[in-house]
Image 1 (cartoon, helix red, strand yellow):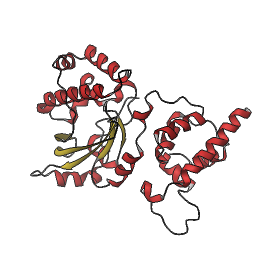
Image 2 (tube, one colour):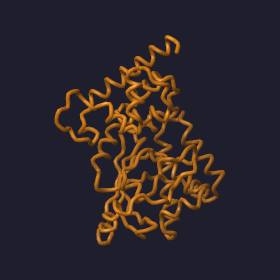
Image 3 (cartoon, rainbow, N blue to C red):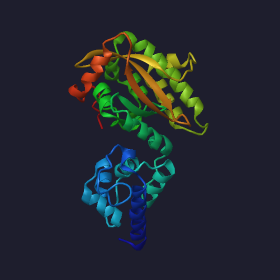
Image 4 (tube, rainbow, N blue to C red):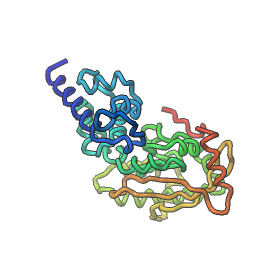
Length: 288
């Protein structure tokens, strides 16, 4: 390895160690436990949170590991609750290109903290273009795994208008209302973005060409962010579940924490309690 690379990976290890030592176990939903001799998280805890082997993470901190993949960098940034600037710096140290839409694809640490605390209700973090960034286990059980799609298909709005199977999540009687709500929300999100941003405009152009329904609704110029919704969701095992979908927006509006509570006057509370028993459903297995 060249000396420049060696220096970079040494700095990478030092940076990872410094970020690890500043986090309390409670910050990431782990018990503090007795006999904790070092500040912050243990190496094995970071490895667990990032989905890496302990040996591999130890090598990274020693500056002796191989170049981490972009997926591993994203996982480490999430595990260590890095800010957007810190995440970009981690990509730089690893010699990987910073994602073009960095701020929107990196989960805000505050959002992750809240998500970790929502253990008894389905919850997930999405972008303003309805790209799912992270889900808790109950959200996966309710909605299916929505976080593994790539490219334009990563947006649920894109899949809604281009892939009929995406609509199985809602009763057919609700499809028209959902379509209108998605289009109005997308127009509001696009208007909030910087005029030089091409991610939203490219998505809109693609959908206008691919979907006559989207093109017709876009021409109506409705604009409204989706905030608090009452939804009817179709679970393949539990059937119809009626929920309230609540939203918490990040300061720049690029990310939203969604959580689902049972609708009053329905049997949804009992059905949601069954989710942990039913486990992960198969309605959204992504083709990668």
